Image (cartoon, rainbow, N blue to C red; front, top):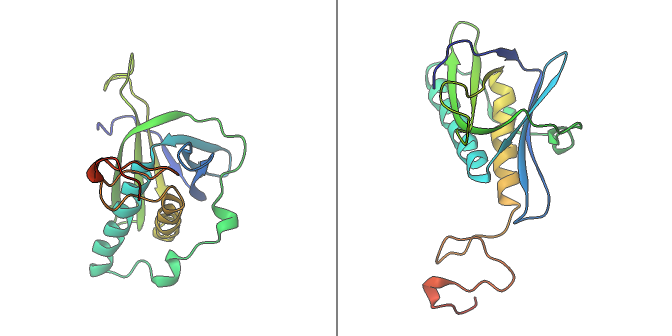
Length: 174
């Protein structure tokens, strides 16, 4: 992911939310600064991966210098929901995280998914400059949100519907 000419946004708030019923949900990441809200579409697995990556980055950085404590991972659910308008800028393909030692910020880089006429050369990229506290709360909230979906079958690791026919149990119901 090339970092050339990537617009940076200093984020006041950042959150992830889902719209729809489990199994039909669409996940959105929304970042706000003083002037605007930027919204992006994510896949559920990207939300889960981002949550884990943030927690790992914060853990690694905290080994050298404490930048967050346990209370920073707490969130106020009311404040974690996205706000209208929900007009996504693009669907996210690649993501990257980096810690900036000089100003103690974490940069989350989002790149548009490569599909159709979108190539590596013309894909849109955005860099969101966030505080460690913002991303600590986002990490906890994101995992909570993912876990509110359909339960995962312990045998085949697929989401379970009401009448889940598990291929690992030769199609028998649980």
